[in-house]
Length: 370
Image 1: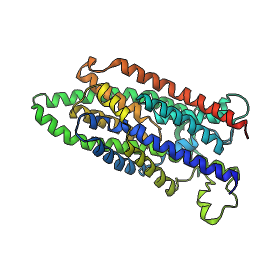
Image 2: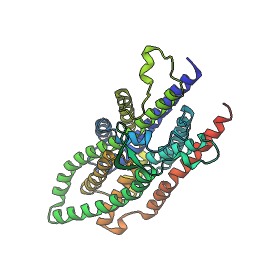
Image 3: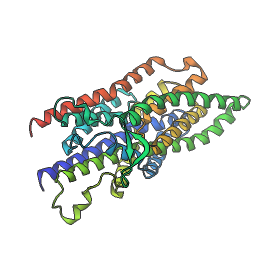
């Protein structure tokens, strides 16, 4: 086995390690509400989330295509296995730090920041911004003509990064207000009974949305890795049983083996759980009952499902957290622990710059030994 092929396998394992960490890091966000309201036990919630994550991962490829061809311009820089390795390491380090602190930061933005920093480090010169696709018309891979859609970091990352938390808070606030109007004359026992059952559905929906949004991101990174290795000639002269690794066309559909691998690794990570983040979201930020959990999960899952079909790598963390905030604010403005919210928001703001910087430095350090 050549050193290039060995490095490729190491990088693929690191990518899957990121997927596993994403499973227990971000799925904690997805199931925090159903655990905190005591509708399901933690183990039941993890089983539900694992299964629905798995289903969601198979239900689209739009986000994966954005990750592997809509952010980094491969005409300016060749994305190598070393580039992907450094991107993953930067994202993993930040994910583990925020997990340890119990802060629900975004794995999606950690991954995007890592790719940005590692790609810029790979390019000629220092901080070469031309490697990034900021905004451009999306072209049809078959006809070469504009599709009418826009792609790039501005449209697929920046806009949804701002709009999805705003939507999460606003829609959660409005939906909770509507539910309050509907149940105002209901007995508390009836409210808890009805919405306890409905929250099982909304928790499953949330798991589905997380699988649809997040598993695809790692699928896209694996495609980008294999395409870069194929283009660089690292996969030439492979034995027949390994030729499935070759990806000569990055615009092609995602191979089924990549989808299955990413889906099952995320499901395994999901089952591992993330109790620190569950405690932060489900107990510390706002106290919830089943009706509040239902409203927050239904809001966040719908946003994830819609943006996922549009190819936007939206943060599950941002979406569910702001949905919980909106639901809590509808109940009572001071029901929210705003000092904790401030810490969470700062973690969001710092995620892309810090992971970009980490990945940039890791690449420059490892490149010294090449």
